[in-house]
Image (tube, rainbow, N blue to C red; front, side, top):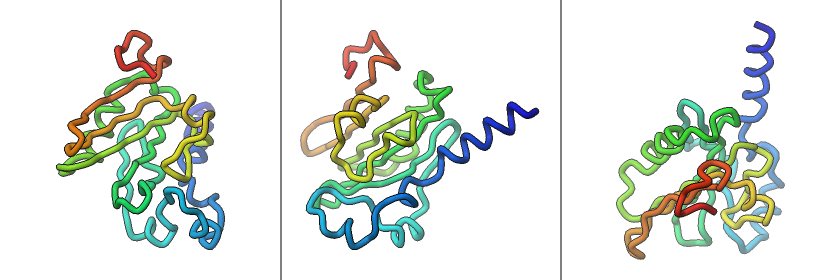
Length: 153
């Protein structure tokens, strides 16, 4: 029983939206890179979540209006590919032109912007991209999730 409570509390702590710890809105507006939704926007937009995963942030690619969804996968389930397909199906449902979903199993590596640091890229578990205009639809896996994948990152 104590172990379940500890796991629940740990999951609750890890699933706290990363935006709560972001810089001030003024500092965020000073950057010209891709910017995560402001906390006001996040409050009005309900982010998707499901069994084994949670959408913790949505970043915009520059000023394009295209969004990148940053997903936290339960660390114990990061090798379960059904978690990823469930998240992609729910998030990209109804998207006819563009959908990008990135997955991590540790909240501390989830970026505040669409651009990734070397450490964030190294900890990325999967990256899904659908871009109709470019003719791209691919799901690339971290070698820790699927070492035999042709699209292993």
